[in-house]
Image 1 (cartoon, rainbow, N blue to C red):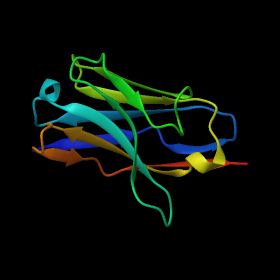
Image 2: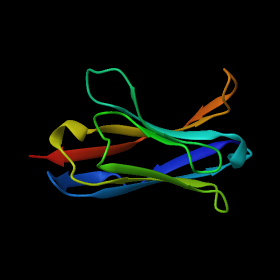
Image 3: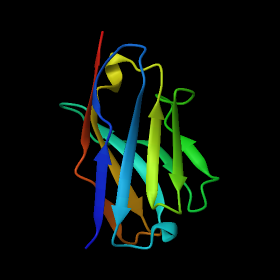
Image 4: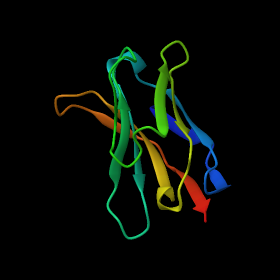
Length: 118
């Protein structure tokens, strides 16, 4: 059974930091590009960051570039998102996503709420 379980969300003041973690199981982790998406109330889900299968190809949205860092641990089938200098506009539900690539299979986590107060 495929599982992606996010943790680490919560309430933080503007300028603070949070570290999200996504524990996975049930699929071959190293075959998948891992991503973090977020969805704010009333807005579409957006891609925040992605990391390639061996952890070297990291990409970020313009909104989080320089503040967030994505990383993966292929020994533990885990992906993390370190979020620094948080802003109120970062408030959203954050989702872990596994993408086989080339239009193949994708998996989603259930999401974790991040709220940044001003």
